Amino acid sequence: MSETIFVGGGGEGYADPQELLLKYGNRHGLIAGATGTGKTVTLQILAEGFSRAGVPVFLSDVKGDLSGLAKPGSADFKLHDAFMKRAATIGLDLQYDTVPVTFWDLFGEQGHPIRTTVAEMGPLLISRLLELSEAQEGILNIAFRVADEQGLPLLDLKDLQSLLVWVGENRAELSLRYGNVSTASIGAIQRRLLVLENQGGQKLFGEPALDLFDMIQTDANGQGRVNLLAADQLMASPRLYATFLLWLLSELFEELPEVGDPDKPKLVFFFDEAHLLFEDAPKALVDKVEQVARLIRSKGVGVYFITQNPADVPEDILGQLGNRVQHALRAFTAKDRKQLRMAAETYRENPRFDTEEAIREVGVGEAVTSFLIKKGVPGIVERTLIRPPSSQLGPITDSERQGVIAASHIAGKYEAVQDRYSAFEMLAKRAEEAAAAAEEAEKKEEDMDAMFQDFNAGRRYSGTRVGRSTSRSTRSRKSDDSIAGAIGTLVIKELKGTTGRRIVRGILGGLFKGR
Image (cartoon, rainbow, N blue to C red):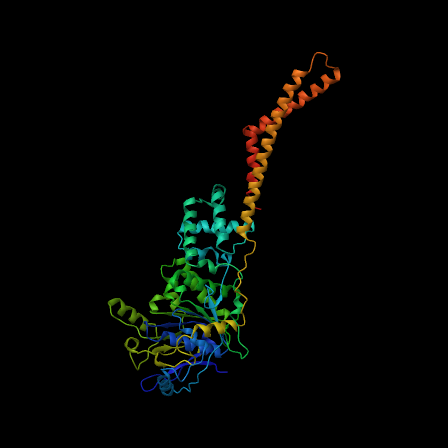
């Protein structure tokens, strides 16, 4: 098996064959360029190359045209002649072929449903997803702490919504322990959750939750499975898209074991439209991404950011991206020219041409490239003709997609939603038990009132019937009844008074406490 992925080459004025070394495939990378310059094709050929090397791949299909990875290219394709000419120019024997594809979709329409639980995503990412203020994020953290302490599983959105109601009802006690819990902030969080629900975000949360190892698979021929997330509909909620991919990256970091420097990556993760991850992101979140990008390499995972301009990626993260394919950048304004110059300065210079000029001039399907070479040193920047893909360029039909989904190795595993006994049901049961206890206490008070009235009525009746000839034994029983009645009257009076009401409230209040 080859130890490299052939990316492209050139003829006169272009580079020798440009290859990505598999052993440095987990050193991360960048695919950048203006719209329409060929980033999607570069993404497609890298996915093919990693898959054929036995490396599983995850990527998002933002424009809906990467599904062609599931079908071989064809001589009937209108660009076939151009592909063959390009292949001959760069010395490639182009053979049309496919790779094993697994389709995923958060909405469950164009692929297998993909879910996580509220607890697994955690308060930091959910706060980012809901665009919460610092005070609102603090209350969300309190809610998660309460859930942990009281054994309330947070699986779906209704679990979180019901927990926030409980936090609001018990805000006085929680404020003493954790700090101010305001109803206004709780209301704001609930409104954001409602917006997320209306956008279809509730489909992300629930069970069965994704098993990451269903993505890290090879087929019977040893090819890595290409996990393709349908993101065209998801892009209508860009914050949901970015937060989900960041969660997935964080889960990979948490779950995978340390492997050091493997001969090839365990998984390659392509993060398309990467600017959405960093736009308006708080520093704490950017620091988290930087930490994951820096450390996940030791787990054997390579992360490749795809964006229009390298300036979309923070410098601390950009400095970790060793394998780069830079398609054309346009410079129409002073800001564009500055960003172009900064992009050129991040490459190791080639004395044969001016890097800044080359980035501005390369055409569609061309790029300036730099891949890590011996000892992980960045290679000299080169002008490169990108090779044509072996799989179909462009989307497959809906019927072809459904056929791939039906034949998948995980068909039927995630389709049926499970609704386990969790926080929503537990808190509802507590409320029912408290209501029943309150009703029973009220009934007992009414019964005691009735008994007291009957007792007084009986005493009045007995007093009118008994004459002076009453026997000693009768007088004795009357004396005993009078004593019992006096005690009963005193008890009833106390229960009806302030002390009694305090006792009843104490009993009911205890039913709302945690375990």
